[in-house]
Length: 164
Image (cartoon, rainbow, N blue to C red; front, side, top):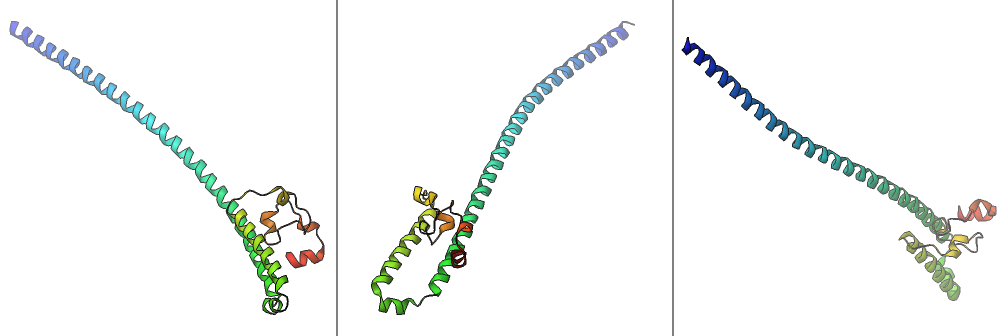
């Protein structure tokens, strides 16, 4: 009988010890899982911030692309207008007969075209360019780009036919 009691006692002690060690292991695992949860939460927060930043950058890039496309369309229209203007004249004959006039016109048009390139490259508009309201005040080479406040619809039909 004593042996049975001792055997039961040993079994109970072994069960208690194994239960104790099992609980200690669970606590250690719980601590490890809590640390991992904190790391994962931090990583998720960082990733969400990064995604938000990328969304903002994407929207900014889209806005810049839209602005560039608008400027490009205006430049293409001005290029077409200039091509039409040059196609209507026999510059060789005119230059031969009136070289001073042709030189003056070409110099002025070159100056206007260079200003168009400056504006397209990001130069600020001058006060005169911003306030131009008459055809004589605008840059005729790229008035859509250089004179954003100019209203072409308020001009004469002859001007519209020639420039639009």
